[in-house]
Length: 466
Image (cartoon, rainbow, N blue to C red; front, side):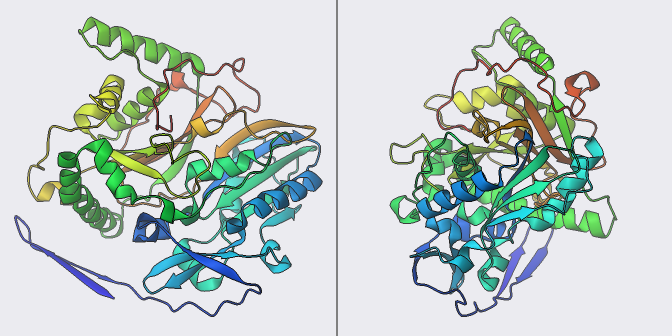
């Protein structure tokens, strides 16, 4: 399949994309099952190529192999789609769900590994970083590859480390079958005091997510995004690829930071005081607003994509719905540069974001100069954490590939909860971007709580993942 896009303007450009569609092999797995369609977004090129949604959690205490084996079996029996496979249906993918969980389906889903991390002190910065690098090789394959190889779509792995009594739990899931909210809902079911429950995975129950975005962001804003946002992302991707190949720019690497709760409290208070002194009317700002605005300013981002969890915005879209029901709201620079600008954009009128600048300056802007950022916040999914019998949770973090997976973004950030009541960030920025946070904002890697566990007292915003 060859797609040629030609654009005329200040610059003539022809972009040719060639895709080789590999026929799906005959189903090699035993047993019968049914096929379910995926959302249009889940069948897109982007989600088909991104890494798995994955987390790693470090514990100290009793080895939980027996508990995890029994409990995960209960989770999979309640959610047989976890043992399913992706299948090609023409140019789209479908989710094949078995009628019965046979041994060959179960074999690769839960693994006890006493060798991979046995030589690593994961309670040190270098050891933890090395563990993340090794565990990247254990993640489920991207969707386009999984659909051609009968590859499993999720993986729960228990790993022994060199630290006596310390072990890691890796939970990873192919992004096409679920987003961060889905991944964490299943993660919580592994707790000793949890009850495994079935999640709804039939995408046919809901309209296309693109239609929902128009209800939140407004028709005019969506027209602008469709005209410049998507085209700008594609063209900016080409520009980034050229800069990193022809100009030999350094490939972006991940950087992990743990934020001091005291610094966050001071930043929110200072921002609120300055906003009130200027006659502003936004009643509060969240930690998410403070952290995100730092990235926008340091990376000089023109357009920021902020991922929002749609669950809770509609009566029938509840927390037990599996799939990708998150969407990125686009914030312009004037909104993203300050915490109050972000909060105001998310609170305008009936909750819709309506930007004011609907025309890019010229064609060269989205091609060469537009700096796009991406922020996704997983901290709200952490809740009480994962409770295993006879063990204490020491540290939790997303497992993100060491290189920025989406080259169309100049900078990206994942906000997460390393422990209850604390926040950390994983950032992806280029070599020309200064440090996002000042030295007094970050703390060294610690496996002990930095403050008493107190949930942040912030106004809830329905439907947001933060």
